[in-house]
Image (tube, rainbow over all chains, first blue to last red; front, side, top):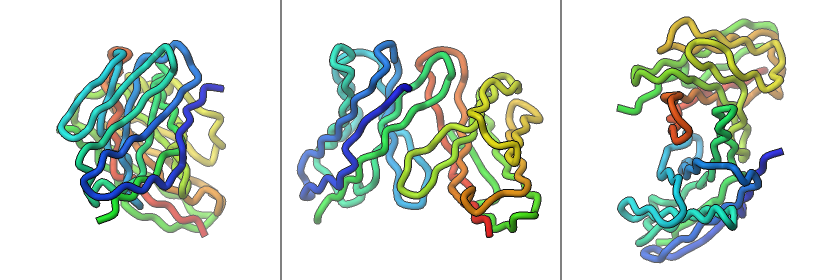
Length: 111
Length: 114
């Protein structure tokens, strides 16, 4: 059973702070990793994808991947109240072309 | 454009009804997916279509019947559902070309079975 683990939270940070979201995965051969943001009652929205070890930056978001430790993280700089949502870590099962999601981390940004 | 559309947005049906959910994408993607998401849970894969052929069925009960009429359209036919089938049904699509492909989700259909 391929697993993706996240802390469910809530993770509460003040406005303007850095939010750090973490994810671990069990399948050592996984190659593709994604972070989706999901507002309550809405569908998942892609925030970042990452495929290589190291950091990938896009605006206020930075994804970090460490395949040796089977660990993916998402940093959100200058957090805004509008960033309050559930963040889903997803790992692509290449053979099945299917995403396995973590349970999601609920982020609350306090004004 | 990374838009996947789904209709209807909301659906209420009785256990004896037959209804269909529709999904459409015009990104030239060749893989399409159905996921089911219960409240406060992550999406769970139901079906995968690759080049209009069903490639994965995650042991979904036969009261759910997928159909892919062409590369842009994906349907999910519903019949004799149970109240526990109430959930958000998400359609997604991807290029289905390599291991780095990204899945883009539609807005979902919120289904309530009475």
